[in-house]
Length: 132
Image (cartoon, rainbow, N blue to C red; front, side, top):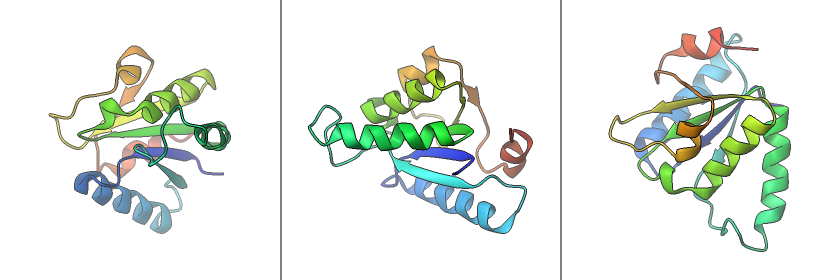
């Protein structure tokens, strides 16, 4: 079980760098939450036949985590997977955190419409202070 489930777009260089930083903090700092990652743009269609199995697994992973962190990248707002993850986390009563690595990135509607907390990136204390 991870304490922090992270939705990110690994093709984005900034998101990839941030992912590496989060993994490093998790490995090096016992106060930092454990992390797991999910790719925002999967090679499988959101409504496709194989999507149901992935959704079941993601739902289990989100329910096991304490919080969801959405790393908002250039194309995050277009991801049906990300909107679904946010809705699933809110429905499960999880805290939803969001961060933008570039201020010009557009937030997905599910983040704007639902209860979420925007956090500054690359600030380790944000994640250790908000531990449940």
